[in-house]
Image 1 (cartoon, rainbow, N blue to C red):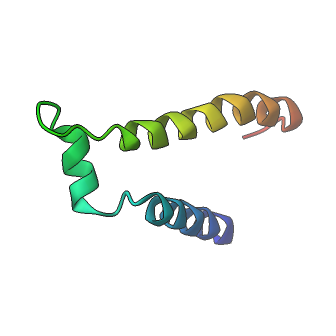
Image 2 (tube, rainbow, N blue to C red):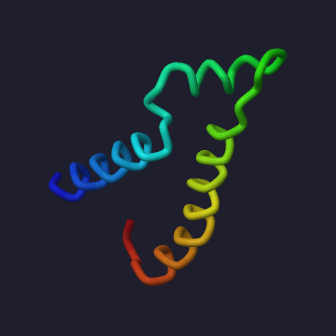
Length: 65
């Protein structure tokens, strides 16, 4: 339970640092015909890359999830 809480805090801090808590950033990403802002996509791709790198390492080291 404590580890999940710490992971949530890290996630929230990452969103706050990247500015993804601002409504204008989300609307800028979802509005493709006007001033499109790809920064949300870059944050999502960064999270996917980290997952693609660490998931195989974790599954090799730990027998049970």
